[in-house]
Length: 244
Image 1 (tube, rainbow, N blue to C red):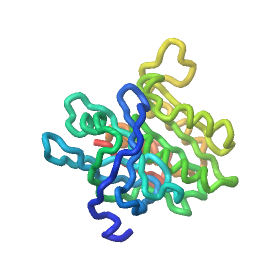
Image 2 (image 1 turned 90 degrees about the horizontal axis):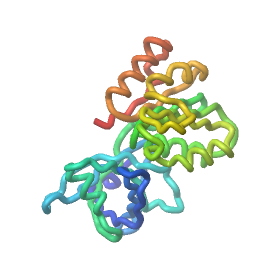
Image 3 (image 1 turned 120 degrees about the vertical axis):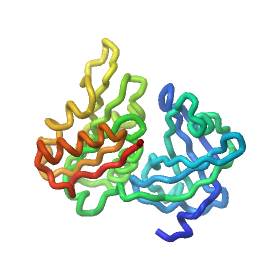
Image 4 (image 1 turned 135 degrees about the vertical axis):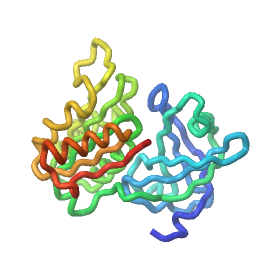
């Protein structure tokens, strides 16, 4: 990664959609058509304007690198009431410009890690770098070790990319999608409770696995503790990204 590729650049919003009542997906392309060179799992800084002043916020890139759209990235933004950056990004119109620098981060997968089973643990928009990693693996194709996504959120409406996960699990035997809800409706037939409740029995079935956990520190720290103290995993098999 060169310093030039990380320098401040101007992006243009080309598409946007609601992923949930509080989360908006933004697709942004470089104004000059230059590629955004990154690895699945990395993040960028965006600079939305608040009262005319740019404010910096970091967002994981929500999809795998794709040569067909090398000048574009996708992010997901949770709207926080009174949060100047998130409200600005939720109100950003198609065609608007915004500054970016990056990518940054070491929350990525190596070739050696790809040879082992993986359990991806995400909560809320913490699932976005995991989505990029899983897409990257799916595009490589072929057989390989199991990949499990344990995704936790409050309600059915908060299950970001649900249709995508279900379709991928249906056609790709390597991949298993396990959602768990902390405030499900009465009709919900899946797992209930936080990801930290279900992580240990699922991970224990994946001998030699690596874990990739992304979300708020409380969850990430508990996943680290369970992995080390209860499962006996070496710290080199535990990979995390905190969102607070």
